[in-house]
Each structure stands twice: as C-alpha cells, then as structure tokens.
Image: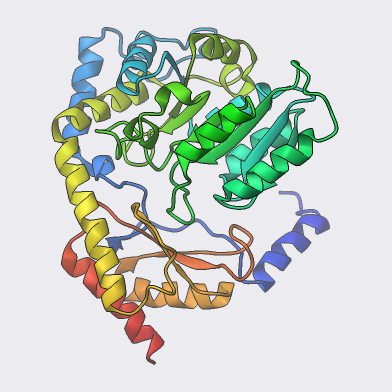
Length: 387
C-alpha cells in the first residue's frame, strides 16, 4: 500500500503527543457505563423477535434496500414507520435518515440559505456544525445555554439594518447535551424565537424515548407546535439505528428534494426499519417501567455523588449522562484505565472533542445498572484519588 503523506503523519504524531490519538476499542464484558443504550433496548432479545415478526407480516424480505429512497429503496416499511413517528411524536410529518449525522447534515446544509443567519449553542453536536459549514448561511455561536448572550448576538446581528423578509433566522440547540447531560431553557428559547421571528431547531438525540411518555423533551414540555424542526435518533435509548426529522409536511417535501444526505445514499434495509418499529412497539408496552428504572438510577447516582463529596467535580445533570471533569488528556485516560481494570466500561472524553482543560470521564446510566454497580464505580474513583 502507498505510504501515508507526511502531512497526515504529522497530524497523527501530534495527536499521539498530546494523548488524544483515537483507537477503535474492542468489545468487553465490563459493567456498562459507556453506551447510549439507556433503556437496554439494544440488548433486548424480544425486540429482535418482534423485528422478525414485522418482516413476515409486511411481505417481501430483502437483505438490502437496493438503492436510494428516490430510486428503489423506499420499501413499504418506510411510510409505515414515518406515519407512526409523526403521530407518536406529535408532528405533522417525519422523514427517516440513515443516521443522526446524516439527518443533521441534510437539514443544516440545505435549509438555511445564503444571507440567512444561524445561531447555535457552542456545545452542539459535531454533525450540526458540519452541516452548517456545508451550507451558505452565516453562523454565530452563543455561550452554552446562555439566553442573554444569544439575545445580545441576535440584536447585534440585526442592528443598523432593516429586517428583510428574505432573511431567515435559525436558532439551534439540543434538548439534552451529549457531553454535559444538561438541558437548555426550551420555553425561553421558544419565546425568544417568537420575539425575533426565528425558527427554532432542537436535536433530541439524547431525549428520544425517555421524556414525554416515550416521546421527547419537547413533547414533555408541550412545545411541539412551536418548534420548526426536531431531530430524533434511534441509536440511543431506542437501541436501534437511524434518525428522523420531525416538522411540517412542506419541510419534509423540501428535504426530499434538497437534502443530499438523503438523496444520494442507499436507504436503510427493511430489517433496519422493522427494527425501529419493533423498538417503538416494545416502548409502548415496556417503556414506562424502563424509564422509571432509569430515572430511579439517575436519582440514586446523584445521591451517591453528594455522599462521596464529588459534586464539585461532576457537571450538574438530571439526565442519563453524567460527567466527571478530569483536566488533562493523560489524567483522564489514566483514571479511565483504573476504572476499566476494576471492571467498569467508562470512557474518557478528551480534547479536542471537549475544550482543553475540560477533559472528563463520561458516565452513561441505564435502566439495567444496579445500585451496587453505581456505588462501586464511584468508590473506585475515591480509591484512585486517595492513592
């Protein structure tokens, strides 16, 4: 094979020098505090059985979709799933994408137009940033969850110019942030969007299936009619793969025509789509108990943090994501290594994924984690620090 270009070798060497070189991990049997499988659906055998049943009920079974959705890949399960999602998440329409990354690329690269303005929380997901970069609108970040900073930037951007009807404003946030596990004031963001005649877009990746009776945080707050677009994903609490954009029927039609990450890629297989439907069916029967267990574990974990005197080190969160700040890539990797040797699957989050000095250990809680497991993992942190 050809030698790697020297510029690329230099980039790898730099990553290695600052302790941020990534490697693909191997599967282990450690206690899971790492995956996004919040409700345990990814490991649920019953969902696999239900997926098979759905395939048998819906006629043809093909190994692959055979093409993009605009060619041969829009098999019968797609409209069935999208109709269900729209009703379940209380939206006018839903459009399924192959992943959350694809959904955000398609949405943000095609919807904001040249001359439009996009204001995004500084901690939004990389896929949203990449989608914005691919588009032609001007973009501005605001301080994390800082409504006042957002308002100031909105006012500043419009100062001294008459608001043209052709200029659209988009405000972008997540309902539960993946790296901090916290949530913005969505009600205030809705109010601010109305004040500036802006379109609010909410990424619900880490809220899908957990809030609002198995819907999302926007639904729990009763804001579904106030949001321009929501992105829901199926690879986290739903234990499957793929994503959908929720919005108006007109938005769906626009994305079908202009979202390149939908148009120019092979569609999900019938098995994948059936798996998403099966996860939702399981959610309708068993979801309430799983969510109850998850929320119980979140409450218990927070109590343990206080008892161990670790509040000042953990980012405040009421979600399934809890982060222990461990400044420095090497320090974070060493502490994670200690926990892994003790039998816990805890991953370090390193810069540049997070800001320099805000490196951390990320604990994902699940409905299936036991109180003993949570107590032991925090005890190992105390043990490590007392060495």
